[in-house]
Amino acid sequence: MSSYADVAQLAADPIVQTGMLAALGTVSTRLALRKRSERQLVGQLALFAALTALLISQDIVPYAPGPQNASGLLRFFIGLAKIAWWTSAAWSLISLVRVFVIFEGRVREGRFLQDLVVGIIYIGAVLSVVTYVFNAPVGTLIATSGAIAVILGLALQSTLSDVFSGIALNLARPYGIGDWLVLGNAMEGKVVETNWRATHLLTGANDLVIVPNSDLAKARLTNLSTPEPSHGVTLAIRLRPTTAPSAMIELMHSVLLSSTSILRTPEPSVHVTSLDANAVELEVAFRVADVSLVGVAKTEIFDLTYRHAKAAGLALAQPPDGGVTVAASASGALSAGLRATQMRLLDTVPLFAHLTEDEKEALASTMTRRTFRKGDVFVEQGSVLKSLMILRSGVAVVTRRREGATGEAAELARLAPGDFFGEGGLLTGAGEPGSITALTPVVVYEITQEGLAPLMRDRPTIADELGSLLSRRTAAEQSRLDERDGSVLPKLDPRLTARIRHLFHL
Image (cartoon, rainbow, N blue to C red; front, side, top):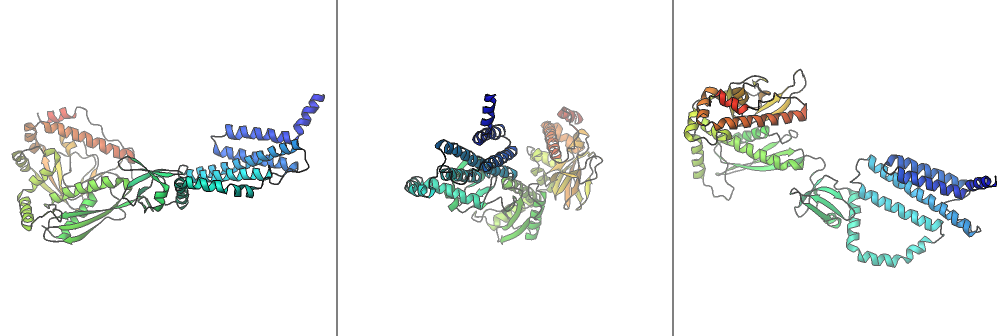
């Protein structure tokens, strides 16, 4: 019985209870719940509250010096209990910081500030233990360590400059993870990480550039991702002065309307910036959804400008220092005007790029012209066209509505000069994947099966090119539909080329 009484007396000892509670709390919160931040916070707070209640009930105040008249062994165990209490308090505050950073959804971006706060909490806990457990004068200790701090500060001057610059940048938050920055030296990159010493930028060439925080703090930064992700782009287009500038502005509006890479809001703009005997210079301004799309949008606008200008009989002008004379400009415009419209249109279609002049003239003689007004729906979804139609001028949009759907139709593509459609019905008897609506006045030229058959018999490889083109276009349209509403286009026969050859008796 005496052994049980001894155990009970030992268990009732507040020092033993504090040690057991601290050990149990450490195992449960730091090991079992270390991957569950929210539950770890609850466990830490519960442990801290239990330790506080236990120590206060035994007249042990953790934030006051210990009794001077107690025995050495008692002071030792009281000191251990206070250390456990201050450690639990520090862990509770740290868990609170980590949980709130996670709730904000900015874990990577907040890592730097989080580490700073955690470091301050640990320093405060250590100084509190030194003061209230060991009864040491913290002020004197800090003063005597000043010489060491000065020596370390001089030795680590560059590193400390980066650290404090990083603190300033993280507090001011001029940029965040994922933002695109342009530095004063014209270097451009996306922020992928920030830490105590440096910021990591990923350039457009996929190179990682590590910039010290002290350099960033002194550099002139341009954040391309704020106050919103969209980014403005301005391009200069020079055309030969063979028509009125107002017609050129209308042409560039058609170019912008044809684009699928730019934003419609705010509305793109076109202005004439200069006019002389050699060129009309236009400034085209638009926005893209993200700075990473600038290159794609520029390429598309340049391509569409070339196609629209060529379809309208306009020519690009030389740079200001290119030495172009008025006579040369007039000569170029005259030669372009003398070439038949059908021939110039066939020049813009890659499918007919390898034809000889005689073959193009033979095909051009079979082409018929059709015009549509703005807003006209000249092809209905599902209709079977028996001719290949090439857009000569204007802009049209291809939209598809799901069967039984009453909502807004999904946009498949926009058609610009040189684009063609109807090859599915002409070659395979398939219906059109979507309706085609004129966004501006549209002129198309039609090539019938009877007009194309002699050419295909002379050049059977055109059947292979058409089959490949039809497959790629259907795959691209299906990909766009998958992104929107999951509609499914009719699958093409894998023996498409063989069917085309059979249809045209090749």
